Image (cartoon, rainbow, N blue to C red; front, top):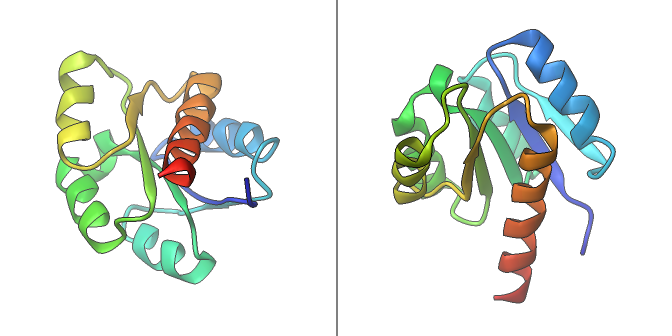
Length: 121
């Protein structure tokens, strides 16, 4: 699998730092957006293949618009109350998965699984 660029947006700075550190163990380039408005420009600037998006802070419509604008980008959403209902809604809007933000391993697995699925397609 080729190197993957990741754009990360988490509203909570501590959570963003932990996720960025853990993601950087698997992906060579992890760029942290300071706010939800920076996500689009960061995807384009860094040619990101993955976005880890705090959907609680950015809103569910952000997932849909990012998916429409960047259909080849894997979008893994995070939400502190992630459950099956929120996950289903995110998947319907184009996300690859929905995870709780403090479970870095789950986020990483979701990213790897979706990138492998896209590579095989």
